Image 1: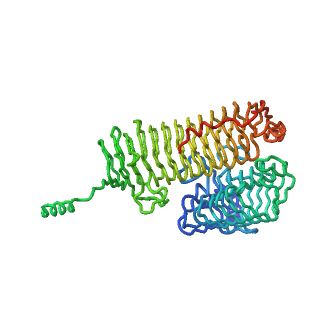
Image 2 (image 1 turned 60 degrees about the vertical axis):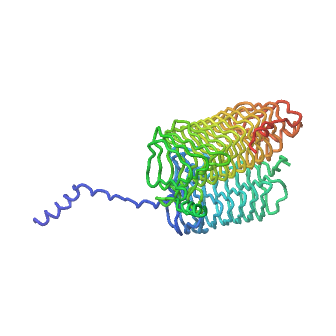
Length: 264
Length: 367
């Protein structure tokens, strides 16, 4: 009898006991990437680009397939002398490899800024490939940079990249040599800006929904295009000549503007 | 006689070579000091408040490389809290450089003016391979007839008053950056950097300067006042960008920049008698600004002579568009007729020929 009484009492006591305190879930902090890369470094997984990053000559940084880089917007207008922008940036004099692929792209996605930013304003500076840089970038996605990919006096190759909402998608300046294929550049101000004596071979790519030019090719820029589409931009193509084999212009407000000559 | 000569030669050979002045570690000059010959800074040297450092013509000041945090940037430098007079001559300039055999930009820190309210003066100096060549916080300085080359940043000022005259600013990673400063630049040449001039909350007077072949901006100012006269701004990616500021630009040549020659955003601008030609995208990009645009040569720009990207209408005076044909001029203007969300541009009767706009620049520019 006493046992039976106990058997009733025990569950009753348990049900009156305070609930166990919830287990705190503390995820490990994401690795932070910033400062100067020394030697040969390979990163993978999820990480935060917490501040400016510089890859000096002689060093290399490789992003493994599937890497996800959250870019933290800069909170100050300060620019240190060795950098180009007050926005968070990746500055490359050494070697940069992005080894994504269609199934496992490498993504650079900005975090939300603390202070509100106007629609369309860049949230970070982008990737800057400066004189002497070596870069091989494939299978990647990059959003809302000022200049998605800036190339100055460097010989680089891009493949399978998507640049969305960048003020400039690709910006090539003098001395650049770029081979690019399967690029999808959309929703910025200028898709491709090529100036100086840059040389570009571009294939199977698309530039669309730009507020200004899909492609801007200045007089000295040498461009070879194959199966490139400029679609639904304000101006499809700005160039000194109108004959660009390998380029299709679709649904742009103005298909072409000639440098110095206005619309045809 | 021969014996005497031998003795003199022997004695002369025993004399020590010209001594090098050397400062190691953290040191402070507490009394007025004069430098000549070779000076080695192997640490951080401070010139105390009220103390004057005078550097004689032909002096070479070298800084050793020291990098405590592995960022590749040198940290040895000089802080002036008193007064610096570095008065070289054209024949015997004063050299500030790295002590490294093969230096690179950023191999040493800076010539820092910190709360140095006295009138500091650098004349006929060569400053090279620094992190910041000349750096002033709450300082006052004049820099004349000097060469700043291969520094990461040639000049940086904050809360300072600085006048730079007849200087060459060549092949620095970037040229000048300043904030809350009053800056006068006259007859200087700034070339070969990422940007030439970048300022915020400042007053800049720019006269007779040549700013060319910089990879990003020639002049970029925010919430600042710009008075620019008789300058040549050519071959940069962008010419002049003024945001939320006031600008008066007269008699300048703004030519052959890869993007816009000028870009004014939320600004008050007087743009008279300038030659704004052969720029890649537009001669003038105008966004929610107000002011006067008259007497300019706006011919031969890449896409448009003038873009009105703001929502308000814009009335411009008589300018040279490269043509007097109204239909052709309309093609060179982008406004509400092209983009319904923007304002209209109305223009006065065009000039009938190329004006002499920008000719004062030729007279004043450095060789």
